[in-house]
Image 1 (cartoon, one colour):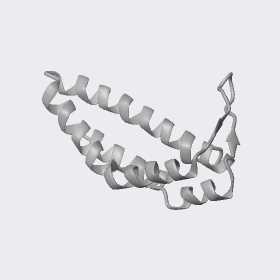
Image 2: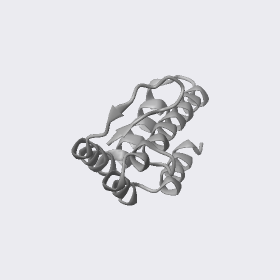
Image 3: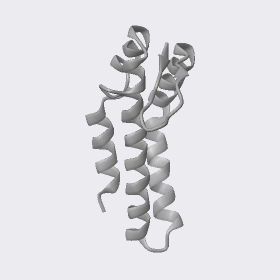
Length: 106
């Protein structure tokens, strides 16, 4: 199926096999990746508050991209029933937000 984005985004066909592999990989690694980003922010910034600000912005942007892919108006939902089915298996947005909040506590 072909999906077109707004604001001058080029139309592309969604490859369901690639989307399935991407979603499976994400669901396997998302928590450990957030943990690794948190650990890197804590250890690589001399100022803990600055590191947490960078982490917050990074995780917020990741959530935005994830929502654009899996949300109710996201790319997968618009691509057809087979792609929309992948969203049912996706990490829920509340679970994603909960993990982000837990990592941003000082």
